[in-house]
Image 1 (tube, rainbow, N blue to C red):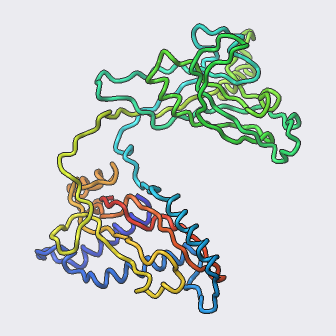
Image 2: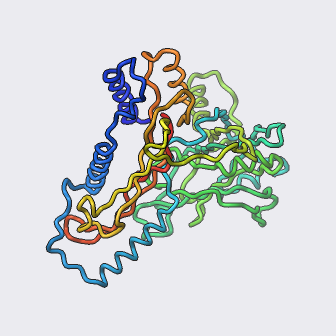
Length: 405
């Protein structure tokens, strides 16, 4: 729950405490003038759209003269923007927050996987790494281990930008690619089968840590522990050893010493070793069977007083915006309303804890309030302050789901 939502909940709780008498038998929401509330919501939406547009008042389009060809072109662009943004829902509270996660940390072993020769594993053109993952699947057949996140951290301690073959690369940036090795390294002539996990841009002008998301690789290793043949980092444009070097886990033949200087160097070396940080949790494969269909929307006067999503149609012609907003004619904004009884539709774990505290001691914490947890963008074809047609996408303007937070 963000700071704004928290302030709204507190203000609403204080308002209810001051205005309602204990003897009142009717819920607070029955005293509300819904027409005034609808007008206030529409005014808030108008202000939000203008704020996101970066202007304080609606554009003056009285002297704008747009050709039919240009308008037709912009309408097609508007339709393309709708297709591109379809399905882009902003989930404010991810379902994973309801599940306890386990943290796992691994350090590069400095050795190749089993049955792989050391000289083949340390080929100069690639940077190969092996982590001995010890995360096993649960005994329950309907449950599995799901990797929430997996970050591979490797330290870039030497860079050689002057070795770039592409002399037009003035930014001195190259692409690093992380590959999952699907077969072991068996010879220097036959490259192992590998699968691209991700790629990222790195600079050859500075050293430092590189953080790479290898969630897909770790998930594969957990599900196929006998096929953990390691990870490979390479630069596809040219030999990576010519451009940069990573700090690796290569073993040293230095004789151990009690000298404080060498002790500090050893500690520093350990801090720079490649590491892997993993968060996992268990989940059901088949999922839980829903006993009853979810009721998505409510209507004022239908008797529902608990947290629910209600329809709200914003007509641009009714609010006087049809002269500068070309499309759409209006949109369904929706809004959230209703009370939040204990354990009813919690948005996240903290909402459930706050609800329990409120039940035990109302003065210690306010009750959760009904708020939007999933939002969808709004696409507009409109004239800007310069009289030009523009296609804009306004994030978080359409309520998709309401829960108690």
